[in-house]
Length: 130
Image (cartoon, rainbow, N blue to C red; front, side):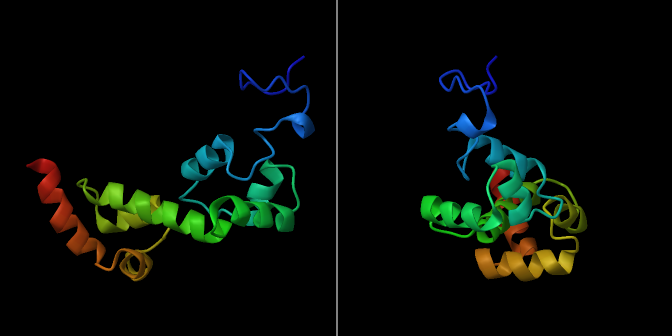
């Protein structure tokens, strides 16, 4: 019986699956993107990859050049960018992207994107409707 559903893997257990064991596997990436509105910890990601948190973090940095926390954070900012061009309120965008409040979104978004969420919305919402 095959454990992995990836066509070219053919693993019979989690420990033998080459896709499950990588920190940046599509399964981990998809799971993070589905749970950005929740607290996502290195421990959660490590458990999903059958690794200790330290091993997971070390392999993640080796594969991506950034820490798991920074990567998740940037995923949240990118989600906020996509949501800001919609008609959702800033509070709703903050909640859906895992920032909880508009103040947190404004603080962190401005640090990464170098403009406020409101300015981003006015700039890019006009382009998406044109």
